[in-house]
Length: 196
Image (cartoon, rainbow, N blue to C red; front, side):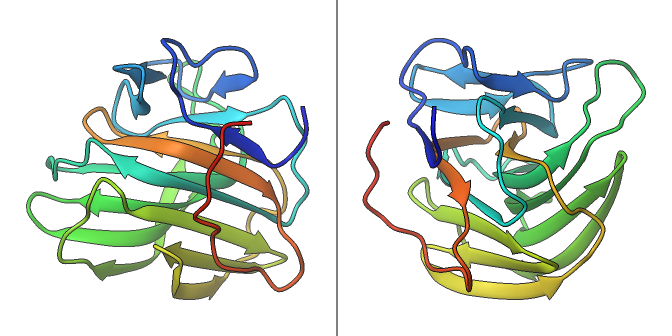
């Protein structure tokens, strides 16, 4: 395989190349042969058939967004570790749509060895199933885009390398995943999507 990785999830199982990062109590699964959803809140899977460079991006469109209490979904970058047992070694950055019980927001979330920190969040009136979320990491710079529009730039030096993938709760899904190497200076998402 070669980057960028494109996946429309139009099949019945996640399959080879994807690694489950929370197999202890819930996997990321394909639903209705159209999109992925977490089998438990805060489940992740990464594409591991390719090694991602330190400067990377990941993006995906929302699917099955229902505004369910305390559910979220979004692309992840620089992910390492897993939760195969109650011990949690997962680390990653994510840009996610989040609903905390009727109050929707989007956020940049950092997890380091299982400990979560929300780096930034802002209210968002309503998400749609076609909304495109993209996160970029370049050195210590993190950029979050919603539908091609830069929402926030942050800096953080906690995580320096890892894989790209998806993060999803049990009632929220993602589709049309893309991830790859980030060119210097970043850039807005390309809306033309084609299955690799």
